[in-house]
Image (cartoon, rainbow, N blue to C red; front, side, top):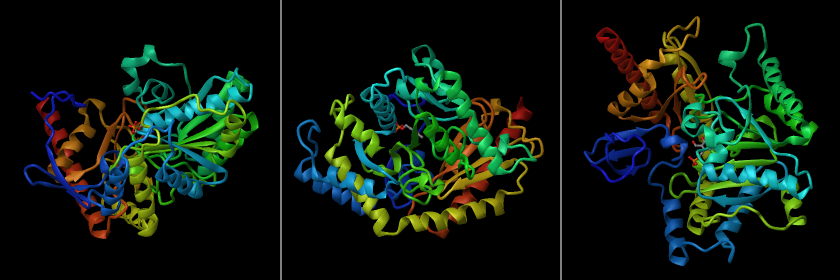
Length: 449
Ligand SMILES: Cc1ncc(COP(=O)(O)O)c(C=O)c1O
């Protein structure tokens, strides 16, 4: 019996040995093609020399310094670099240790902004169903991954939800994508009016919905409309790019593709690429100035904020993405991945939808293509698929409850930005095989039942 607490207490996990580029090896020397970097983390693969060298250099100088006593060159340079990449007047960044902390900090920053401006009645956040913003209690409250919330419900703060942008299930057939996007975005305005505009702090959404709903890129016009509504009522727009940011979708910030500038935006997974735990919360000049000209201090501090070694790793990751022109590769390989998935799975009787942006791609499974009826959730197809993928040497990120927290199965693919055509073909081959193997297991269990 292990002394470590695992996510699944039964712990039947293989033991990792090492990683090489896009491959992971276990202690039996079995290799796995990593097509998801865990949860869209390992964007440079597993052995890139640049962040490793940057980490060594920084540790040799000073591994950690408390951000209340000193700043560091690496933190300053990273902030400057991210500000130069961020859209519009998003010019300031703070550094945390993980996605949940960065979103938690975004919520607190948003509230503090209004406190500094004397608008202390503002206390509500509005978010979307089928969203996820992290596991600490604050962000768990504003997220809507119902399975993750359930045991903690009595501890959570009140939050309000509108529809996600989910055209595969919610767009009516006689509606254009654009009209659908406007209709869905308008739900935000209704909710703000219902709560009272001067009581709302912000609207928070993943620019591209991630693991809960199986990758949901916004339709054209949707986020612009959201921005417009936020501006009309003085509500802050907080975009969570913990999963979809840092180049994952083919631009450094995914919202660049929607031509939308948030007031606050978060980054995490791809920022440190797994070499160090690091996340960022960025804000506009307006938010920053309100605090600087008000109390002049952040009311929210963490011990490991601005961790020097983590900043050094992230800086090396961002510079590598630029130096190796990896965003271009994300766009090219992402297009190929979607094309091959359509070619190989587009007519599969259990593949309802293939969607994505860049190297952030989701496949949604159904029992019936015409009616879009999901697979029986009791079959736990996503869980079976995870195992068949592991058996076939593929790491990907399947999930369940895609539609409403209970029904629906999907798989999320998020290969490293360094992949080539051969890796993409292998990913699709192995996924196809694993889906067939998984469905065979499902049929066998039905017969057995
Ligand atoms: C969109 C989004 N926000 C926040 C988080 C929380 O990040 P972390 O697990 O690093 O705390 C996640 C994690 O999956 C995420 O996908």
